[in-house]
Image (cartoon, rainbow, N blue to C red; front, top):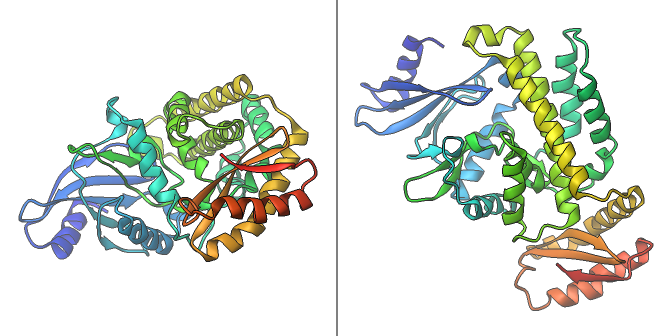
Length: 371
């Protein structure tokens, strides 16, 4: 879309006299522009790249934009063409937090929880591993380039944990919750932008996505998200998802390079690919520093989570939910959500329902407690 076409769209949707103020940098999937109407009210115009349109269901994105706006954690969408992916959102005054070091991690964690604690789910799961193999990696490999030994080593390690990660509880997730997609306003509030990849996923995937720049930033957010007491299982999932996300974006960057998008936009996507491969290695190192891996325990945890899903069906009927936190010394620790969180009967639910079923179906479980 050229400048004349953009102005024509703006004049039609925002009124005559609308203007393009400036392009906005950041993001690998959209060209973005700050624009305003004749009264000076500001908006963001998003124009997706060809690769983005191949990866994104725009009708779902429009639906997700509305859901998240109703949660009060993003701006209002005023124009959305699902056939092209072009959209116009009201501008959130402030700055995306990839441009500042002044970040309140506690408030960012609360923003994530507002999304993850929503009783509304998407009608689509993000399905990360299917997406990885059939879209990102498949296209990156189609150019016939030699696969990096480090990439292969990290991929093998990650995919050995595939079934464990796929067994986790799913909530509504952003799935691209990096710093550039979070805006801090002058009144110190935080909001999400950019909902191309929203879908049901493990909520710790979003926390891991925050570490796109530095793994340590995501790890810091994990502490706040888990009330400064993340369990070993939560730390483990964080690092595994961080490896996944880094390898995913590595493949995206490789594809963009071989498609010639770097030359078109004056951007070196091979440098981006190198960053994400190093980022994945940092997550891999962090995993081995903090986690005492136990494959037998992995199998038990997977069975606990699968069994809990049967219990969650009953709890969700009354607006509640139950999340696995940790299995340690025969004790399963869970966290209650929704109506169950402050319910006086939560202890009875745990003992009379959750504990009984887990003891019957999972060898080694002796007790269930609130985390």
